[in-house]
Length: 246
Image (cartoon, rainbow, N blue to C red; front, side, top):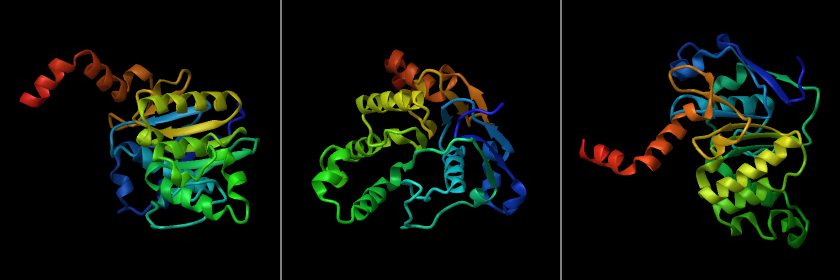
């Protein structure tokens, strides 16, 4: 059935990846041949090293995004470290074209912010910065600048985000949660790799777990992010006593 999502599904042709590539060593990742996205918000959840960020980057670059982030119009490179997964991914797109787009990477957002300044050209600062809270992104904290930049998008678009919670306090994560939900309700699509028990709790989002050496759909309460956080909050004394005395 045809949906109105910008990315309907992806396929991975492992024959296009060298046999000695490290990608074959990522257990959960190497089992993917096809993934379908049935909701406007999809999370990739799992422990470090399970392949969720690698897959997100592969999808982003296969779609046409700059590997370091930004919109589809951003073209710059400060470090060439893109996996060959992008060459093996084919994307089935929906009938709509996104009116806006963005690939967010926490570790390279400073470079994106700098490139945003370069693209200002001759636009007066007071006009250019209005959509970013009235000041340069570099005059704001990492978390503030990311939120200011992201909140400047107000049209139904495609947004890929790699651990957006990295620079955000719990309160700011709630702000981001509200923004994501509102944008998804207006037709935006999100693919998000995240450890955040706050963001993962978005109602109606589909969650793909990369744990247990496979990729499978799971419920919010079954994610390790939720379970570890719930255990810590409800049994902090006993948990810390056990961990620190082992």
